[in-house]
Image 1 (cartoon, helix red, strand yellow):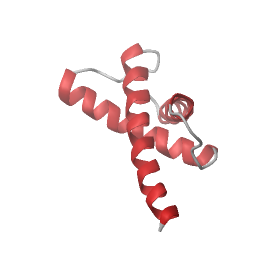
Image 2 (spheres, rainbow, N blue to C red):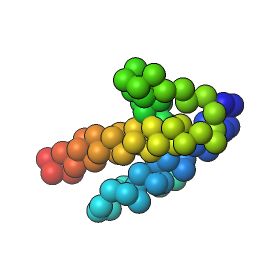
Image 3 (tube, rainbow, N blue to C red):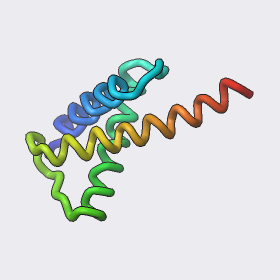
Image 4 (cartoon, rainbow, N blue to C red):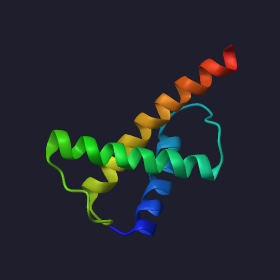
Length: 88
């Protein structure tokens, strides 16, 4: 998968993760892109480690599911971090 395809996958996975999680998450499209790319990397790494899944194709269902799952996980962690800062 190329660099721009990976960025596009991260942006879309981050947007889907924000739509899945309830509540209002902060950040604009750039934060969504960063969280999505980090989530896609995390999801791909965990998928390869736990399920021996290959995530080298853009139009692969496993690539998308792992990227969205990783993005949800990263978004939850991001919400915990930013939530603690706003309360203090």
